[in-house]
Image 1 (cartoon, rainbow, N blue to C red):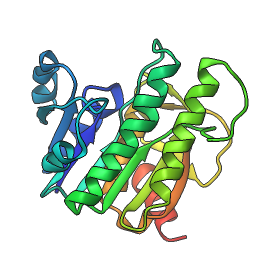
Image 2: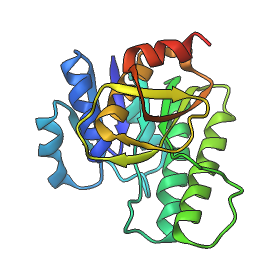
Image 3: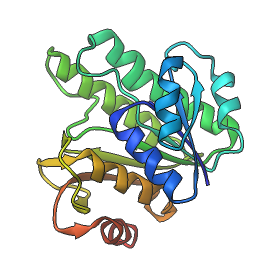
Length: 218
């Protein structure tokens, strides 16, 4: 499979690219800065410099043409202000979805956030972030042309992955290593039977492949 990943230099994305490459897939990572390209190559991915805050939809669609799946794993980051929560966490996700539809790429997996809600009250930056993620999720889930899956991890950690998770429609809050988030994403991309599902993810006791298979069968 050829899989295009937005936010290709992110901490989850780099892990995902390594897993996909090791599994024989062709991973393509979208990055904003040319100097990030070597890190992607080291992870086994093809880097493409493309700024999703400014690129026209047809330029993004051109990169997606011929791909089997797209993964939105971009984010403005914890140090960014409220404006970039909208332009990246919401706007870039919608742009990638628009481009996927134009390019005929149906499989679309989103890394969202637990608690994402377009109607969340509050004026703190984190509230704005969760509203932006919720609005992006709503926009993507409204598209019949996409076979979407929305993944909402709990608190992300850099602990070593265990390969054991809890993946359900509602898990309750909890931590999850980025290693395990990437492993779940790799399984989800290859499991189209999870299309139409919004899933929460925390650390747990079920092997990743079994957890994905279980939700696909529900």
